[in-house]
View 1: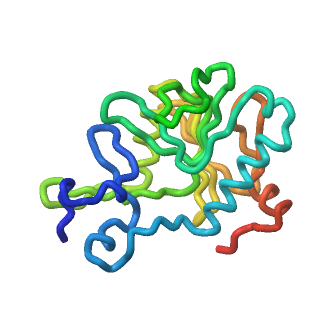
View 2 (view 1 turned 120 degrees about the vertical axis):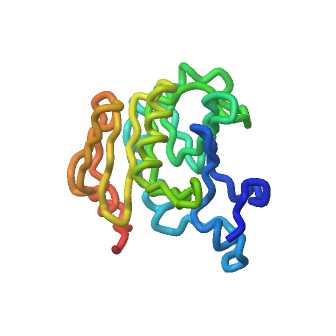
Length: 203
């Protein structure tokens, strides 16, 4: 399979950090002509991202006044050749210098919520394919913590788990049915949110 960096279209690049480029899941099939380039995260992904952000920002008067939620792969620039995409970025309004900027933000968000893994975690090293989704979760979360983000929540739809990472030493895993702490005093129960919205995904 031919997948050298210079032959992969920019549209298939999702992120770049830690000295590595991360390509979108399915990019190998695109290069082989087995799949088109049209981005399709699926109805389930959009439903969960929408409901989570709606729960935080539309049902909480305090949150509406003090924080802002950015969605749809909001870009974050950590440093040279370190650019991340994020599903839900929670930023404090008083820290935004230019809310209307179309450039990647270089201000650490308060909290980040990711829905599923949208990259191919494998890379070829000395002829071997290495890398797992958990490697990616830990590496990206570590980069974000070092940048100044208070915490990251990973919503995993296949296993119906929520992974919370607020330090390099501790990773907490919750069932969807459990109440999950996010930031400050805010908590949420994803299963309850999805049931209230009548769109609980079917496994």
